[in-house]
Length: 513
Image (cartoon, rainbow, N blue to C red):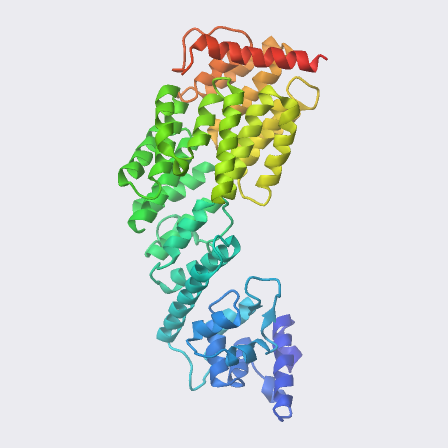
């Protein structure tokens, strides 16, 4: 009877064996009729074999991906953990001793429990399921808020389970708002949101703040793996819906503005950044940094530099300073600024910012001191390991290319691979920086024809006016003049030209030794 009813489903076989043993334990001789059920009925019979408290707990934990006895007890609304301990000893409860929460139910058991008609006297109504979800969400929030400070694993685990509960049962965001801010503050971007239905991405199913927050965090995490145009499209739909509370709406607008900047849509990006600045919320300093970046990409370095003193740590002032000085060819000053940014990120415990600052430091030093840059690149690889920071990885790869410029270490082959990876990411500026790296390599080799072709590509890439000064820098590398300046430099143009030309000539001497 068991083999016939199972249709080969291992989980059915497992549950049947568990029920067989339970019947024998209670003094009943198992009969074929005890197993003449489909999977849902088998679950219902298994429920009927439990005590009332255990049934209540089992239904409650069916809402959770994983749990411990404390979380199960709180989700069930019980005052003692004895029933939860007994439940965890049942054979249908699986255990992973290395998990954040050690116990879990098979997904098919969970979905069947939530939909099965178990015919018990205490079967749950929709209101009972909603109440249990509310208790479970509160219990997860209590575990996060009372847990160790900056426990990233606990934060992500609570967010994953909490977002699913809030979205599925249309619950208020409660602690999820603060958890979302804690999640983005580290710039790590692990997958945290439950899978987003396609209808939500188009805006059709966005009905609650929980729907919108799940979609927001999903879009932010996926932007490290999707083309920036996809990210921008998702965030455009989300911000237009205006379902999120004010501060989370600003979060969505800010990251939309960042995606627009990466895609070269500077005017739209500037409007979004200014909106966030005007709101004077949690991301106001970051948005001021965004405006400084936009001034820099337009070539207005004095305007960008004027903002730096007011940015402070929230606006990542040291990194902005470095971003201003490396285009000037002042690599020691840029590297010092990036080191200060990395140190400040370490002091605040922000792993993503630390890795990004170190990658930029390695990139700057690679132009001036390739031997020293090798250690900096290795450190950058170490700091980015385990973090979903695609653009930072590209920066490290470009630093390695600059370090090897002028050598025969397959530079152009590696450029070809990286160019394709950047194309897939959709970050327009990264392509322009890569062409600048290629030009440095060609200038060191004295490949005038190659330099001419690269400058032409740079002009095509920067035709909108953003980063137009990159073609000027490429010309400076080759000792060429430019017909008209594309930037307002902080130093005079002759100084900038001399620095870039000196970097090329110094590297040429080094590789010819």
